[in-house]
Length: 138
Image (cartoon, rainbow, N blue to C red):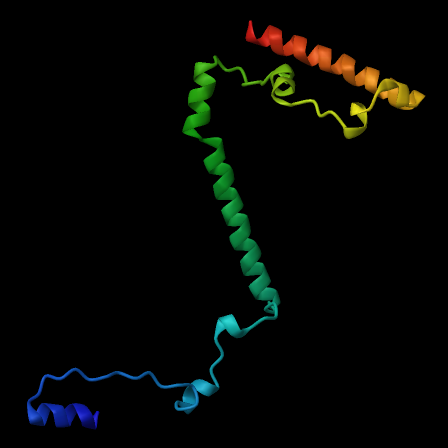
């Protein structure tokens, strides 16, 4: 403050360097606690909990009201003639890939009975998968 008065008296326009005080230099800041410094969950009284629950219920009701009158959903229902949009299970199966396990790469002579059975099942699924994919592309 005094420096500004002196600069005004001297009629100079030199910029004044502003320095922010540290907590040690400002004793009133030592006793204040910031929200970011608190690491423990805040205890809510019964009234505060009721207020939070009421606010949550109010938000849920608003979301329900907004979901009930969704312009996009109404338009989609109007376009589909009131029927629901149902995805076929086959299309989801075609998007997935069959995974060949590492042990299936060894010769059939080295496989035991259980491995041979699983390998045959895998080959059958692979044939069906390729057939379905081929039919989907036609």
